[in-house]
Length: 264
Length: 303
Image 1 (cartoon, rainbow over the protein chains, first blue to last red):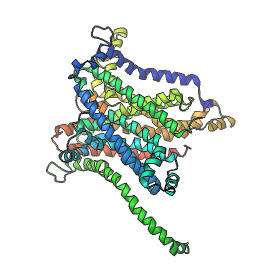
Image 2: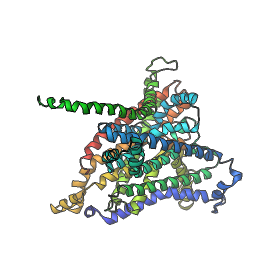
Image 3: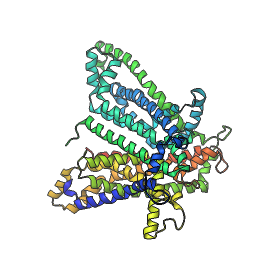
Image 4: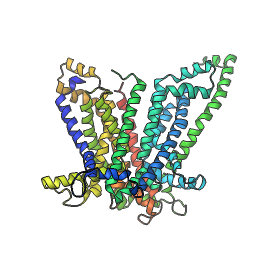
């Protein structure tokens, strides 16, 4: 494509858009560093770690704890429900593949704000039977991460020949549990890792469902703290966005190591 | 054709089919947990969301709530949602496509592209509430950029009104996640443009400037349109950023759903949330269906 590109135009676009997008984030960083008298200091960042302020930032810490529990349960749903099902479809029901693809795209086509209208009565029932523990929200989050998890796991399945692998293992006398855990799972490791990391990122960033079902998670905690202390909310925001950015960088690396073919 | 069934019913093959049938029983069981999960947490909530709009508080069937979609207040929120989504999708699509073009010459997997893709992923999918905070810190009434503009250039961003907390304030915030989403969705299509096409174009006597209008744009048009529709659906269904930003009123449909869910009565009706959800899903499903059709056409040129 190089022959149809103009280098100077590319540079101008890159620098211009890059600058415009950097402005809000640099401004947010400055916002957290500026004291009322106009001087700069890290005072507000240090105040977050001060035990004296623990009560003030409690909503964020409680929310973070709940979000981490939710992340673990959601990853468990991805690894122990979605992944085995996708492997089973690849091995035994290749005809269902298009159906799975469609199913995995549905959560993108059905907005979370619509889903929450229907989830409200379901969670009333869950609250009465299973309890109102924070982890129960993971069932709803599993649906939200399905499109992302599907894409990474399916890409890994397509990259290795699961059928031949499982037949070879069966010939050598392995049972189905051993095949899944010791033969197929290690081969799908990049896809499973990427799916898990992206699930963590989605769960930590989720707000719509949690807030409308009156649950306390990281994002709802941020909104509560933001009402009293906009600076603290800005600091937590920068930390959370950086964390998600690092997660996605790792996913990018893992994906490339996994497929190994993209190297030019 | 009439002869072909005979060999299949030969005695030798019946044994294998019955063994296959046994295995089939076992494997179907493996699909059950996933099917139950999807039924309970995707199909059921969607059905409930669509159906609650058709019943009143006592559980009797009614078309009252659906009729409420014709109310001027509701129509206005749908109109607001639509134009904000159209505008931000258009800006996002054009700017995002330009960024993709700028990144085209970079090696796939290189530092710049990996970084831009990771940053785009964060902003497009996980920003939500946090993007609202970032916008308030930057261009809020007390924001850093606002004060800088006022002090240095004497420009008052909010001389007229505090528009950032109203409908227009959604536009810059939405653009911050629309452009990255465009980068993620459009980059694969642009990367699939084959260098041979540019070479063939030049060999056949075309000019460098002529490549885009004659080859590049026509080939990319379906992908671009599909991405634009995805951006529209994304903005239309986005809730978190607006919820954290808009402090007064419910100008867009998702905020109207929030009002209906939390206060139970909007326009003096119960179950209006269901009707709003119904209206929303009709719009988004129609857009996503077009997206699917166009995407299929666009796939012709990829690989």
